Length: 202
Image (tube, rainbow, N blue to C red; front, side, top):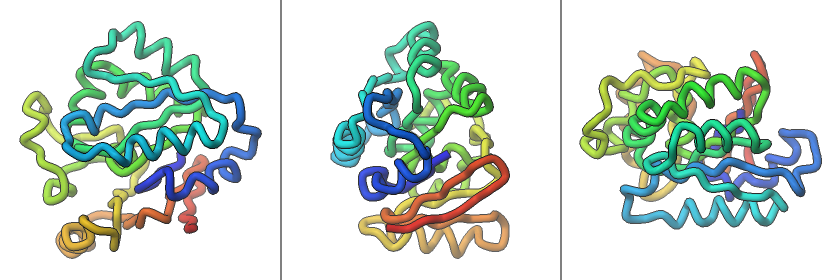
């Protein structure tokens, strides 16, 4: 897994991570976390980053996709990317659509998962720790905050980056003694290969 705060800022590390020629590959690009947000420039930046690497972007918006469409795209494309936005809304839609279990299965089979911000934090065991950052009220259908749990760490995106620096510091202060937090600046990425965990920086 390639878990970033901003994929476009660390895209050069991706080729090294996957260890293969990425030109001509395809990525299932899930922008769902951002569709309820006012600012979505980060999503456009990440899409452009994939295109600059020569990777075909296949957009999958979970709120209006059928389970068949979700299954087909997540299984047929080479990589899975989940964008930033509201993490609670993202978790709601991953669970509601059934995409969560498909992603878990695909990662278990060795497919590379790429997350940005919300897309990285939703890989933690539970997302309650980021209530100060993301508005939970935007996910009215979400029952509980148990997340995908593919890692036992708790990433916090945008460490020391505006406009989130203050709230990230507050989350760290509140939870540092309770959870194995991993603060990530926009120029850092959490790399996970099996049991091996690394943090790299641009």
